[in-house]
Image (cartoon, rainbow, N blue to C red; front, side, top):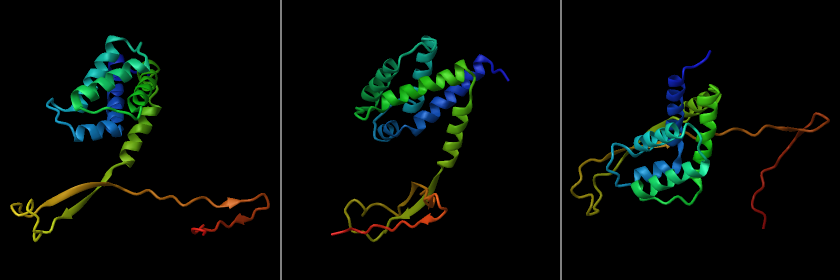
Amino acid sequence: MALLVSERWTLFQEAVDIVFTKWTALQIAIDNSPYTGQTPQKDLLEGTLEFFKEHNGQIHADELSNNFESFMEEQLDCFCEDNSPYQVSVHLLKLFGEIVINSDLTSLQSMRDALKRGKKVVSKVVVDEGASDSDMENDENMDVEMQVDTPVYTKPEPIIDEDGFELVVRKKKGRK
């Protein structure tokens, strides 16, 4: 099934939004910024899509990375030293090629699935009213909801040798 150009751009926009949602440095910068725009992520999304449209996808990763770094520094007062703007720009260029140019939605579908699996569990924390801290004296009952990632534990697969026997692995406790 061939997708129209407008449909591919809409799907690409969804993919970019998912990437920005999962970009840890961006989310931390947004949470700690004095940003005055509508929402930083939405502004960055609109600017990024406009940049792709202006250059018709003929973009180098370092150009896009420079745009991300400038946005983070100027709008969010954040300087990224983890090379994540470059990694995100490489990922977005790959997604642009897959979704907009080749109409391949496999990466987008896997990103959607990962986003569904990564839903956060909400925990409720009640702060004790009897605290005598000066900051707490005027506050009433404080209910705070925290979002906590659900822990994922997978048991390691057993190691089977060529004779069909299972290798027993002992837990190593601190040797002195």
